Image (cartoon, rainbow, N blue to C red; front, side, top):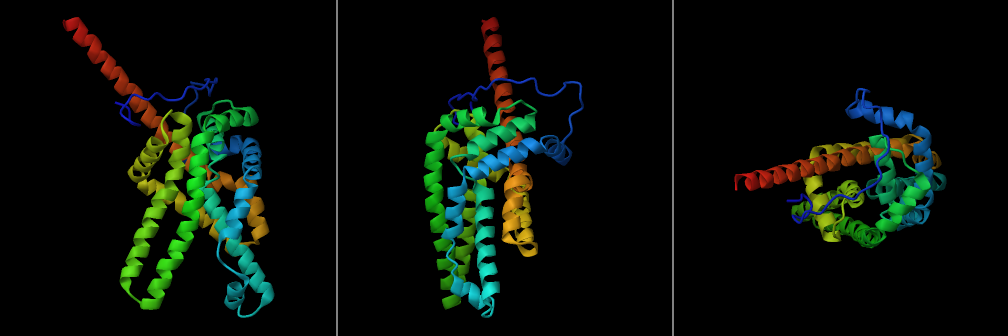
Length: 297
């Protein structure tokens, strides 16, 4: 039985590269992660620039969608206009970068996931041509996810504001409880994206199967999912309080994604690879049983 849908859906097939030297001892965990980032830093910068460049409209939309006006920033800054402008710029930039890092750009993210997966596995990859192939293969599912993400992003902002305003106005803890439940569901949906793209490029499956199994992966690996989410948000927020928004944006589009997005891709690709190996072992066991039964007869 297939992990994905119970119908024996096979993994996508890609050309195998020469990989790494089989006699070389394999590093694990964070040691392997930083070794990959350092060895492929130039390729990462190229990939990051391409990914962000093709996502510029999505980033702009995220920047302007946050309902924080100059008047609110001015009240936070106690009437200081220059400080108010910096506050508004920082809040909008940080929000856009956090959302972009967590859910990505669904139209381009499968290509980014595939390229970084090749980096993780030590497989050769052509950033432009292979990325374009993955974009074409997954366009329909990516477009569907992109449209859903637009709706969810807008509804989530309004939902959080609504529940909080109701709690602030009434002081009733029921609204605070509803806000907590809403945020918990939203967190699961957001972090599902770590696995959605890796499943999308690894398996042929329907959109509903894609969402279902991404949710299973998220819940099954919740502790590490939370850790990587906090790391990504922490880095962006930390920089937001230390440096200017322009520096944050420049850092993120060059090497920042290596620390705020790639750790999620690194971990998710390993999770999905384990699932593929489990399927292969299960298929071998099933084949062995059939062969043994035939010999018995």
